[in-house]
Length: 152
Image (cartoon, rainbow, N blue to C red; front, side, top):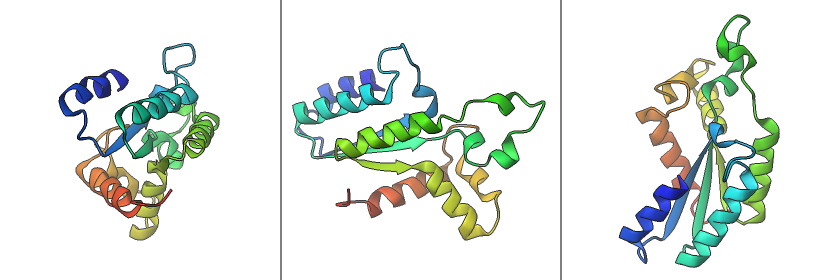
C-alpha cells in the first residue's frame, strides 16, 4: 500500500486533498516493515505533512470471520482458529486518534447493515469473499466517508 501511494504521488502530487488508507487485517505483521499499526500511522503523518494533505481517513477492514464469527467460525473449519486482532485494532484506532485522523471500522458498517436488515446474514452482502468488499460494501463505505467529512 505504501509503495503504491508513494508512486501515485509522483503522478498526482500537489493535487491530493485527502488520503483514504485502507488498513487490512492481514497488514498486522510484527517484525515486517510497517507491520505494526503505529509504524503505518507515523508514515501517514509524515506523508500527509510532506504533501500538504489536510485530511486522512484510515479504514479498518476486518475479515468477515471477525465481523460475524457466529456464522463463520466453527470447529473443524480453518477459520476457527484465525486470530481476531482486537488488541492490534485498538492500537491502530488509538494511533489514528492521536494523529487526529478519521477512523472508520468497516465492522461497524457491517453490524449496522445487519441491524437495518434485521438479519445477521446481511453483512455477507458487503463482501465478495472473506476480505474484499462487494460493490454494495464499497457504496456503504463511501457513504460513511462522506458522512464523516469535517468530523474527527
